[in-house]
Each structure stands twice: as C-alpha cells, then as structure tokens.
Amino acid sequence: MNHKEKAVNYFSQKLHCSQSVLAAFATECGITEEEALRLGSCFGGGMGRGHVCGAVSGALMVLGLLYGQKYIGDTEGIQSSNRVNDLMMSRFKEKCGSCICNDLLGCDITSEEGHQFCVDNKLFTELCPTLVSAAVEIIEGIIREN
Image 1 (cartoon, rainbow, N blue to C red):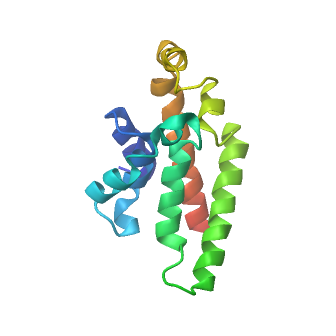
Image 2: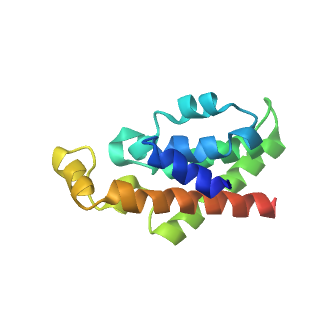
C-alpha cells in the first residue's frame, strides 16, 4: 500500500486527517504508528477549531521530522524546515484553495449547524479524503525534490 492509500485508509477508519497523514509516513519519520496517532490526535479539524487543516498539520509534522532542526544551533535544519513549510503551505493552498479547515469546508465546524452541514453534505466522507490525498501528494513531491 502506498502513502496515499495508507492515509485514506486510516482516515476511513475514523482517524483525524492529521493522524492519517502522519501515520502514513511513520516509518520514514522514525516513529511508530502509535506515536504518530498520539502526536496527530489534537490537530484534526483545524485543531478542533476550524483553523489550519489537519491534513496540512500532519504533513508539516512529517516534513519537520524529515527536514527539521535537529539540535540547538542547527541553522541548516532551520532553513530546511522553513523551506519545506513554505512549499507545503503554498502548494496546498494552490491545489485546494485554502489551508484553513473552515474555508475548505465552507462552514464553521465548531458550531452544531456547521458540523451538521458537513455531515449532510458528506464533506467529512467525500471532501476530506481528497484533502488528505492532496497533502500526501505534496509531501511526496517535496521529498522527491530533496
């Protein structure tokens, strides 16, 4: 199973988008599936507040683990993580229209009405998996380039 299939499969099992993206890359990141699920658990649904999309947050965790600062004074790691962060954010926004969960879903998911809107319009089951897939595709592109 490739990364995208893994991530969508995790998401279909009712994991958060952030957990799904991070867990799909756990091995490459040097963490266990359990660690990935625990680490990503508070970032789904834009941190539960409709902020930055959880798929993006999961992707940034992956990129941080792969390219981030490894020790105090690691200026190369700082530059590398800043670069991949900028690439992830700009590419996701270009591909999906926004990096903000509420904007992507077209409602405020923190309200009962907004949550029901997502359920009624199958956004969690039809739109969100495409966002998870997009995040994975962007990560893979960044990895190829590096």
